[in-house]
Length: 118
Image (cartoon, rainbow, N blue to C red; front, side):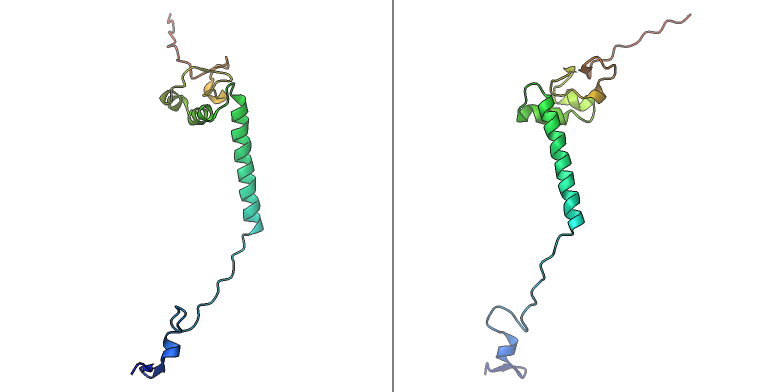
């Protein structure tokens, strides 16, 4: 009774190894293109160099200070959100791009300029 299914022997319907029909083909291992691998390594080395340079630029390096320092990178508004206003050179949150007058204090409050008219 269970010798065949629609005239096909059971050994061809189910091979008792968990595969129905023919055995699945083995996938060839995908090789990573050497150029992609090289670009990935260059990117990782650049990112590590950037983080290390910023980590050593802080006077008191720690993971928390580095995290705050990197969070303050985009602009002074984000620096004030993480509590790093008026950061001096060597402190977390000091970025040269935030130091508009190059006096060593980043994200300092801007004094309103009063112009005298004649």
